[in-house]
Figure 1 (cartoon, rainbow, N blue to C red):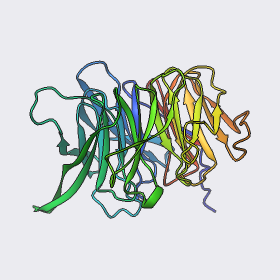
Figure 2 (cartoon, rainbow, N blue to C red):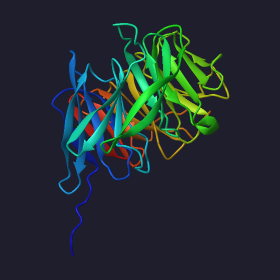
Figure 3 (cartoon, rainbow, N blue to C red):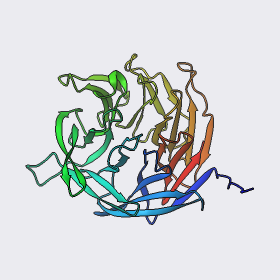
Figure 4 (cartoon, rainbow, N blue to C red):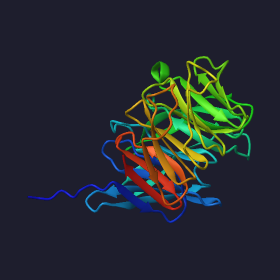
Length: 343
């Protein structure tokens, strides 16, 4: 009888540099594939694609490419069926799309620049890729704006359809820098998105009615809000966190301005939030206290006292992602290490 190697609960990859941006590939044929971005305080940075060799139980670097400045975010095309080109996007000075040409090569597909008239660029703090309509992306910038981009696949050149993008709309979203943007699954999942920023507000927009926005929450101390994350199963809920804050705030869009829950077990500032892809009541948070905590928020609006799971890493966790295609795996980054954890 052939013995099947028991799958480990934790796999670890050591990068050549400090890791900041990181995300899981969504395609069903590329299960344990992730992209990680370097954080080097100079112009020349890197993005590396790694995947788990399941037979050897170790991560292998598949390809690496240069990236100007550290990427602020990496997202693979939300392609659960594997029907689109194998693309990933990164934000930094600009939004870039990269095509994975083979297991060992990725190359720049297009650079999306909304600032054609100036030599200066307004760096992008984050972006989101619409899961219902993969031809839509939204970026947030320090210049107070959000931009919604449309992708199109051009004529066949050789045998590759070239993907390019155009600005669908740009709007002034906040009074100060915008730090994050995320599409909501509400109302069909194409038109609604929210953003957070240095003015301490969470604002919601509808692409069909851009003449006004709704303020869902304002930080009482007017601290900048750095991240926002929609519940993947129930579009009424989203989570946010303030700069240097140790708590994560859960909001219900039906009850604006009042948090429905506060998750405050972290002992140092929170750096990341990830909702479970398959459950409306589980969310993971991670921070400088080396902790990744999974919470069950079913009790809301009763207070959520303690997480149901806690993992302590060997360093300050600066990034956390919950795998869309494999909901029993979470990935974290600290220092030069990427770890995936079975939950």
